[in-house]
Image (cartoon, rainbow, N blue to C red; front, side, top):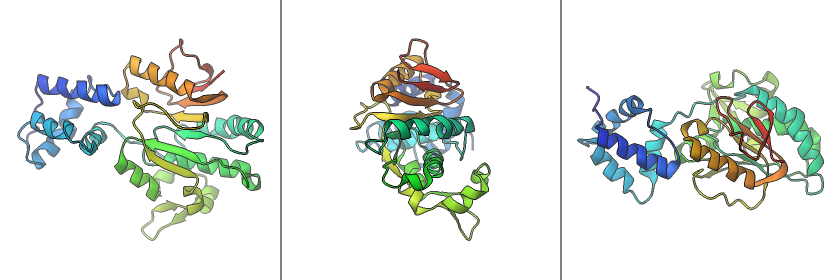
Amino acid sequence: MTALKISDNEFHRLVKFIQSKYGINLIQKRALIEGRLSKTIAERGFKSYDAYFDMAFNDESGLETVQLVNKLTTNHTYFMREVQHFEFLRDVMLPHVEKTCQNTRSAAIWCAASSSGEEPYTIAMIIDDYFGARKKGWDLRILATDLSTDILKKAQAGTYSAEGLKDVPEKWKQNYFKRNADGTYTVVDRIKKEVIFKQFNLMDPIKWKRPFDIIFCRNVMIYFDTETKNDLVERFYDVMKPGGYFLIGHAENVSKESRFKFVQPATYQRV
């Protein structure tokens, strides 16, 4: 089957809509759009991209446009991705939390682009391993958000391939996962309970009740234009505690004009 070509008008219509609603810049992704949408459009009986967009953009539930975004962005992640961040979490951030949050015995931690769950579960396992018996009486649950309800359902299920766990220490596989008959692994319930999954669009106002001690927002701002990214970074700053840590992907950057203090590559602190 020959891929359906997208016209200039259709392409710019999609780019404008997705950027205004989700902050994602697709201007360099024309070939990707055709590759990922043409089969879907044909299978669903639409004769053109415009006909499909008319349906998706006017869906009042918003589910069609979220599904569209899912097809155009890559949810590729794995346990212990960019391991330097998790070492810094263990060696610097958690000792900081333990010291500064001793009175309340709680900390606000947000994984702002949680995808299929590997990142927030990794954070939860590191917290459990770091605190050990000292964790009793602490509230260190992690807020994990993503735009896609489908990917959040997968995250909540917490089942992963053996390949996805290739960088997980053997001790952690034994302590934090249950091996299934088909060779997959499922996160144990006590770690699942440490992660609260919610659907959230990063373009929406951030209205969580407590200021955050730690925010992970890794490998999602690569899809944003400079203005959208800078605005989001400053909104993160506004909802963090002084001294709180902000982490981004190693392929991303924060403007030198940002109020965040640079700590090390892809790691920042609210001063």
